[in-house]
Image (cartoon, helix red, strand yellow):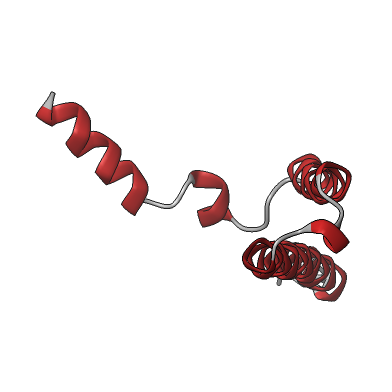
Length: 99
């Protein structure tokens, strides 16, 4: 049992391979954004804000804000990646004269 617990703790400390190598794959980002917006829409349907108790409103507003900040982070990372690819100079061929 202890070895299972230790391995799960080790996994939590190590970043996943996709985070080490750079931005997340496009389909992952799209999935996360869609699921986040679906979650917020479901919450609005489940309990409209005008009938939420005050303490629920506080948590709901916090989760909306964090979800939007998460989306912004994903978009910014994708834009950075696009800019890097655009700025990378193409390898140039040059003629070398041999004597």
